[in-house]
Image (cartoon, rainbow, N blue to C red):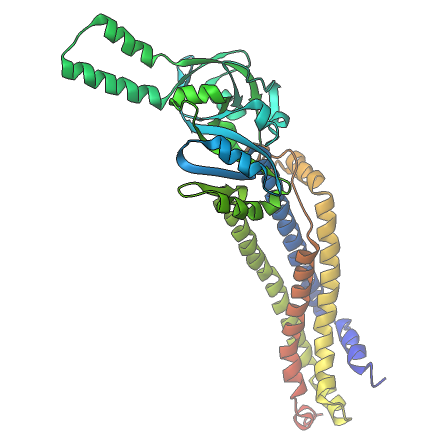
Length: 429
């Protein structure tokens, strides 16, 4: 009985004859349960969202890119050297830059990415993103993003007109020359007009990567078409590199940096999307601390319950201390109460949280059908289902933190109860 005195009385006080304290205890448990449930659900969904986003970025972008912000000359030798590095699977040249796209008097300024289809197929998984037509870049053809196709009203088989900044610069230079020479030769004027003529490309496919940035801003064209539009000749803008493990791209990047010289620079897919991933990581951390306040509110409920119990059980505490109960035993009674509430709240919160994660899409569909609330709009997030990834370490941190908060909340009233003088407690008895 001596060893279990604290736990025995703690359980006894959690089931009082008066229902008021029972309701407060139940509310405290529900508070802990809801806090843990929401934390597990939100953190798991955000982790899943980040992983799905990584898959989409890796599928469209190369794992490592070598560029200098301008023209890369003599790139073939460098490409061969990079191919021989450990961890490198394939290397492909590319060019990229803004153009003016026109179709039926609709104009937008997207970016073109000139690629070699055969070599690019070893770098990225663009084929799996094709939702209409085929990835056919043989000749004067192009593949366009789904959002851009929607804005331009383009379909597979249509002719798309592209104006390059290189054309505009050449036209301006030629007009300046004619003006300085004071010539008004119709033949030379016709030559200038020919320089303004756009490049006509046939749309052979429409891709949808799931990221609005890619789907609304990119047109894929053959490498030679991009080189002609920008007047690059045989030069390119960079080298796209695929590694054996995309999450070890930083290691390959460091090896490449030893091979290249400034102004050439190697960037991983993480570097190119650093702002986005940093924002997601920061949001996940902020959400963790904000939602932890739900558990703190529940902890105050536990503290309130124990303070009420301490006041109501003043006479009993005085009797127990008069009979020889030690200070640590009195502390143990009330600390055990908080721990029991925290334990049951943690278990129920963990169970409810894992259940909601398992049936998250069904629950989301129910909200959409019954309450007309769409908590994860597909048009915004570009996901057909709500992504989620349960990380055991995150769940463990949430559960342990909640239990510790409940235990600490119980120590304050427990300490005051342990300091109660039995003489004062029994003075009027």
